[in-house]
Amino acid sequence: MDEDWTLATRTVALGRPAHEPGAPVNPPLELSSTFVAGGDPVYGRAGNRTWDAFEQTLGALEGGRCLAFASGMAAVAAVLSLVPRGGVVVAPDGAYNTTLSLLESFESDGTLRELRRVDPADLDAVVGALPGADLVWLESPTNPLLEVADLAGIAAAAHDAAAIVVCDNTFATPVGQRPLGLGVDVTVHSVTKYLAGHSDVLLGAAVTDHPELAERLRTHRTLHGAIPGPHETWLALRGMRTLALRVERASANAAELARRLRGHPAVSRVRYPGVGAIVSIEVAGGPEAADRVCAATQLWTHATSLGGVESLLERRRRHPNEPLVVPAELVRLSVGIEDVDDLWRDLDQALRGI
Ligand SMILES: *Cc1c(COP(=O)(O)O)cnc(C)c1O
Image 1 (cartoon, rainbow, N blue to C red):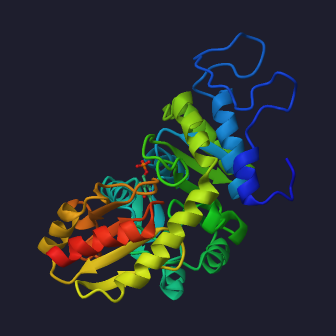
Image 2: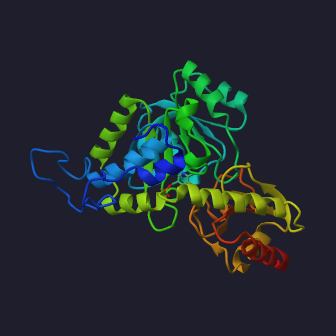
Image 3: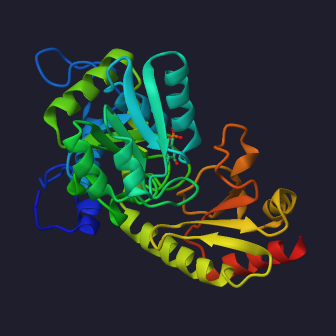
């Protein structure tokens, strides 16, 4: 691999067979659960060449050793297994609801001694929660409040306190930031979202530059069996080839829509952190009006999830397990790669109709 290659080049060029006459340009999709004895791989649950192509590519984008998991949540659960029994975790007050639900279940069943919830954008609050912590869980920007954490500042303070720092990098993607380069120990992805990018596959990944942590995560994956099928990793790598282009276009659309929405009479607040393609708006008329907006769009699809080429919108508090710090009238916009004026016209007519 050429160390000088930029991210855009790496996403296209890595994870391919060697340039030999007659070799396929793309990594083959190998559908085999077992392999002839005496070589490597041995058995599909522990590893296979189709995963390798995906893992090599994402690992090179994030700057560490990548492990693919069956879903983003399988990766989250594997990384949380790094916390010792009866440990202490610091986590955001608002973040991806299923990650927080898993942490809360670990606290209520005694797997964790304590779960400390903090505003991840408040460095002093995070640092104040560190004494005795084993792991700091971050998302930046957070889902769906789009709060941004000082990853380098938190990582330095957490290491002084001997805690592991994890960042869910699903929203920013490696195009937006590389947490490992800022001192974070493990990066987690819902590959389902921007990396795969077409809303047609569920997949997760964890990336770390600590060999010992990578080995523990690999062992956890093999023992628990939370593995993707080869087809999922093959599809995700195919989608990842256009990551830089998709994120560039979707982010430009999001920045422009955020600018226009700031002047809209039906919108009381716009959150956009200046990076990425998620915009969260608060609808002035309240939760019922927000539901009517979601029902009234034609181009935008009313659906959960995010990060695909197509634009989606959703009132997050329709999910009962959404954290209460998320306003009831907040609608999360996952901005896709369509024409920005078409997206604007559809959203504007939906907002004006309520
Ligand atoms: C969707 C999501 C997850 C969970 O990923 P799945 O692939 O759905 O299991 C984790 N973190 C964030 C930030 C997400 O948006």
